[in-house]
Length: 114
Image (cartoon, rainbow, N blue to C red; front, top):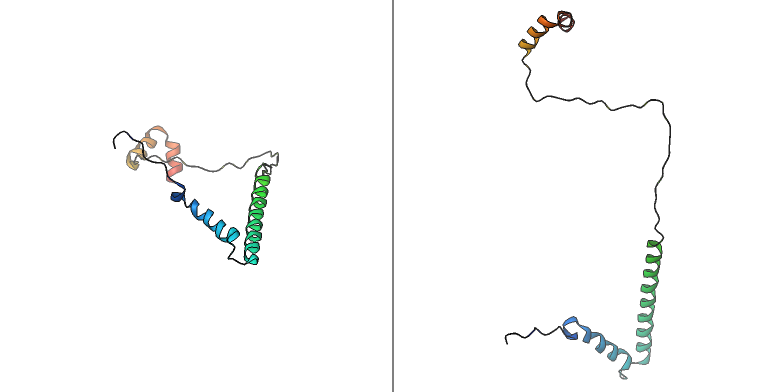
């Protein structure tokens, strides 16, 4: 129908009816031996206790807010700096460069060519 909201999922959709039927079949059903019912109950309670204990330990460790940082200060008089090179993407015309050095700085030209 138009204008009606879709129905919400039921317990059957989530499989919750299976939990209730398992509980009934194991604990309430008199046809099962008492030993089975006691063992199932002990196993369930034991696993539930273990789960609660593990969650407790996990939350306790998480909320301690531990950090593992090690800081040390060492004063040095000299620092070793990394070498770097800046390269131009322009090509070099060696002939023009040579002429420019010859005209403007002959001493440097002689050092380069020697």
